[in-house]
Image 1 (cartoon, rainbow, N blue to C red):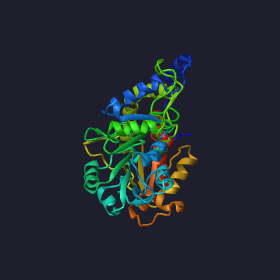
Image 2 (image 1 turned 45 degrees about the horizontal axis):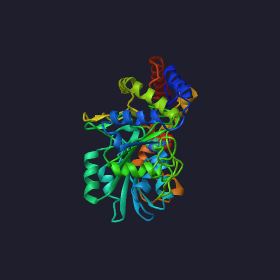
Image 3 (image 1 turned 180 degrees about the vertical axis):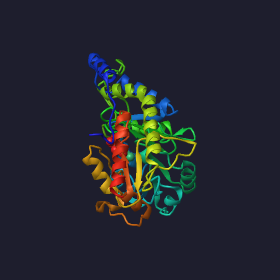
Image 4 (image 1 turned 90 degrees about the vertical axis):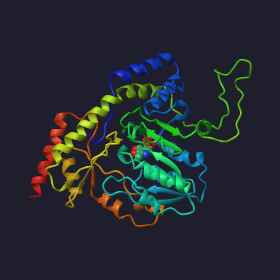
Length: 376
Ligand SMILES: Cc1ncc(COP(=O)(O)O)c(C=O)c1O
């Protein structure tokens, strides 16, 4: 089976794990600190503004507390979003206000967001679909004018930049995922970015029991190191040296991963252009760098589901991301979202990952050509 997404792990990650075992320290330690520092450099930020956690969903949930979003406050979320975004808002008792998206990029635009803003809008929880940056100049301008806090879900945009600035670093808070299906993987893990060191410090307390200072061996012998101080009550949601060792190794491999993903993207662009019933992903503006996490095609002749089934029967797994939140009754959101409906009914995400071989790609293209012939 050709997977739609797949991690690339090898002997380098195993060697890094062996070192962790030999060190006899599996918890949050120097490897986590090194990963935070190196990831901060990778996104052209500073280590005073980033903090690791155990998963990106934790980041979505924590954003509500960290940015003082209260029950009753309205939070705008593009309806094409990860389910964890809807859950985070609703679990907080806040009002989930959905907005439509661009039908081709599946990213929300400033005009989509503006239509649903009310005096109660406290925050925007924005998804960069497949790691392709949203139009951040327009969106930040709108949110700054209206006093709306911006939370960026850059889960799949591990190396995505808008005019040279990493997505995830525009708003009050941003986040990236390193779960098993992402580009840089470590099993589970995530990085958070904040727009001030104070907010980062608040997050550090919140993600570790609310502790003011860390107790334990590293505390000075001048004090009783088993004592601690708490002034707020927090979670325990941290990375550890096992996952950080893998993440550090993957970060070194990331440039090569991205080169291959860009090649896969180009290969699809060149070979699928011939099919008039397929709309390929829109060309990226020259001021944008993508992580090429998705390759979303749109099937224009109503045969999207038939194509997905045909490919699956031939050992090629495809999928559609993300099922619109307005179609999930549990969220109870209202409104009309014609672009998102169009996207959800026509889009198919083709396999894209750095382990895809040229033979895999040739096979996928050949099967799509066979499907094309069936329709004639
Ligand atoms: C857009 C988006 N946001 C957030 C997440 C959550 O990431 P994690 O699995 O690290 O919790 C995912 C996971 O698939 C995602 O696709």
